[in-house]
Length: 68
Image (cartoon, rainbow, N blue to C red; front, side, top):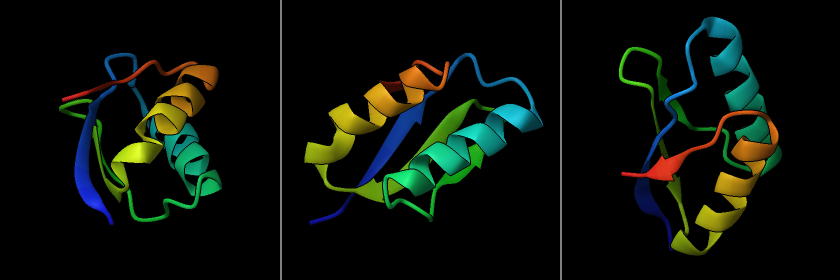
């Protein structure tokens, strides 16, 4: 079951960051991410059990995140 998940990504500061994060999430099968550079938040629909994998993937790309 999918749930709305909001992540804070403080190190996301530019369009390249948004692109990298979008590609990383697509690699996890999450193509519908809403990425807001202004608030530095990522909103996705995903199973709560995927959150650790999402956080690990973003961190590996250089964008540590935390759930809101």
